[in-house]
Image (cartoon, rainbow, N blue to C red; front, side, top):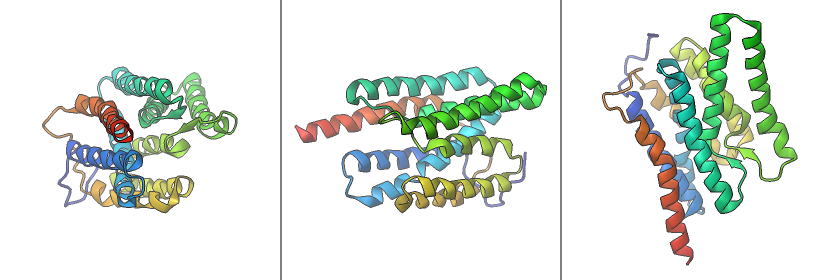
Length: 233
């Protein structure tokens, strides 16, 4: 394992729980209290930590197909609900991360096999992600990927860089780029995730709570929407 910082005391589960709390605060602010900006600022911690942990999941998982389809399945389920209820084409973060995982595994397969076909497939998927998240939204009203193309590629970059400290440096640079294109007034606060990630010790944690995170994402959104509905009626 690459050398971590000497003061690294947080495992993956702890970091994801911090991100989960930040995500919940962010969505409460977005849907229920949009005028309270501090809630959105706290929420900026969620994407960076989850993105970093997605890259770690790609590295450590022994069930690559299952990992991809679990994330894709949750994302697709939420997307269907978004479309049916709101007619929304906004691609949620689980769809974004599913794309990240697929690209990551394909690039790794291309590296391992050195087959031209796999290299072409990896390049195609990156190009497809760029087309869907950057070009197509200019022609399809309402289509947008959460955190855009940079949001898709950042976990891939974290996975491919072998040294932990270099990962963080590149990740921080990526967050700055992300901030330029995604609500810069608050997105820069996502850089405060870097000190938290510096505390990451590279361990998952004793509890197996992966599926809790999968269930929590759609469940908390439904809960917030129900509260919003009751307040408006």
